[in-house]
Amino acid sequence: MKKWFQRSYMGLVFLFLYLPIAYLVLFSFNSGKSKVIFSGFTLKNYADLFTDQQIMQALLNTLIIAGISSIVSTIIGTMAAMGIQRLRKWQRNAVMNVTYIPVLNPDIITGISMMLFFSALGISLGFGTVLLAHITFNIPYVILAVMPKLRQVDYSAYEAAEDLGASPALAFRKALLPQIMPGVISGFLMALTLSVDDFVVTFFLRGVEVETLATVIYTTTKTRISLSMNALCGVMVVVVLIILILANLPQKQQKPKKEERI
Amino acid sequence: MENIIELKDIHVSFEGEVILDHFNLNIKDKEFVTFLGPSGCGKTTTLRTIAGFIQPSQGKVLFEGKDITALPPHKRQVNTVFQRYALFPHYNVYDNIAFGLRISKTDEKEIAERVSEMLKLVNLKGFEKRNVTSLSGGQQQRVAIARALINNPKVLLLDEPLGALDLKLRKGMQTELKRIQRQMGITFIYVTHDQEEALTMSDTVVVMKDGLIQQIGTPEDIYNEPRNPFVADFIGESNIIEGLMLRDLLVKFEGVEFPCVDKGFGENKPVDVVVRPEDIEITEPKEGMLCGTVESVTFKGVHYEMMVRSENYLWKIHSITYKEIGTRVAMEIIPEYIHIMAKEV
Ligand SMILES: Nc1ncnc2c1ncn2[C@@H]1O[C@H](COP(=O)(O)OP(=O)(O)OP(=O)(O)O)[C@@H](O)[C@H]1O
Ligand SMILES: [Mg+2]
Image (cartoon, rainbow over all chains, first blue to last red; front, side, top):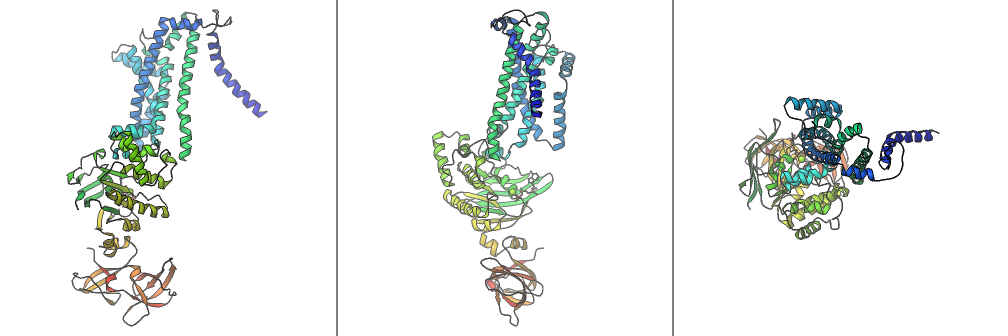
């Protein structure tokens, strides 16, 4: 009885979570115009999607912004984490608490505050400001992903590398980076998804002409009724799913190694 | 023999705490030198100064006569076996050992040859593909040695490399290290706080305490001619008793006069007398001899360890003859076994 209840409860949760998405994706294959009545299978909506100039431009923007912002924030975040790790305990705690603030802050506050900040500086909103904003809100996530790995790192391996003739930069690459790599990768993928996902911050900082997938979906669902939006959502779900699977792969490989160590 | 490393008036302090002060030491080429001293006396600090991980705030490090004080670790021709091995956990045995050669861009064919040479040297053939984290302490230790030796360093620094091993393995590795040192013909600078290890392996022992060198010498010198009570006590077991140097070749302690071989202390000068437990012979008490009563007897395998109380001192004696507790015995010491030290001022 208890087991049955547990199972159906789980089922219900997943149903609520995934049914709307499944519904959305299902109707992306609808040959009719309705979002309620399924009249037949087609790929036409996807074809429309990939010929739509506005959407393709938005997709390109999303990829460029996500790509650049996640790479840059991964580099800055990793370096920051290494710096933080070397601080004294109370300094480290202070910096880590400050790092948490943007993570806990609602996006809308991040978005509005940055918009006001850029306007105050007289910087016109557009592609550049969106990119800067994405880099900024990604950095704390990278730091949070890298820190735990840094804490486990064996620093003497770094000294050993130097001792064997590696310059400090090379010693870092050969001896430290491989040890923290799982954290760096998961930070990078986190940044990537957050950037692709983001609507609120982008919305406030995009100015007039810059569209990303999230903003284009928002504006078009208000004006046009088109199933190609469903198709777009379908594509995004698949993309996010792939990133998620990638994010989990390295951890799975990591596990058996750890067990050996114990 | 040339000095390969010279430390000149080195000063190192951490956060205001002085660790090494006016530290001077010359190390000869192809020598097996051991730093010996209690925990925290600055052995690792000295080693790290030679390796280049610590910049002394004062003084110079010379390598083959050239000043290398400002040279970063990766440009020094010394390699280190670290206190806790510091292997690369993400590489297997082969890649760990090959590391140094890969850094110097040696071609893979030569690397393969050198690595297999090294594996043979440290008796780890067939372990190439093993993950280093799956090796035993002794095996990891040997990988660390092979990794440090593959660069053909002129000097190998070893920081308590056998500290984590059990007694039997440690003995085996001691012989093996000594063999490797002879075979490669290079200088070993070895750190330990195990006095027996220091005595059996070294050409020269440097006894340290609180960042100060207490004595430098061959193991025999250090053992037979300790310069002060600290060295006498730290190196092996010893009886240290206050005495009076009556004149050259004659010392008096516990009210008995003993002929000895030391001279040059002056007349009627207070001194410290060192006698090793195995150098005291137990005989039948007679008039005018140093006598005492047996207080305890412990069987130690090869010998009995006896504590014998004389008037003012409790003697530790290693003897193969058994005496019961409470027996009155005499202690005979031949002149060669009496070592006189000037009183510290
Ligand atoms: N990085 C550091 N910061 C502050 N103090 C240090 C540092 N490294 C060493 N010390 C101090 O310097 C002193 C000497 O340390 P060192 O590591 O040289 O001792 P050691 O002789 O190697 O001891 P052990 O046998 O325990 O390894 C110790 O009192 C230690 O606390
Ligand atoms: Mg040490």
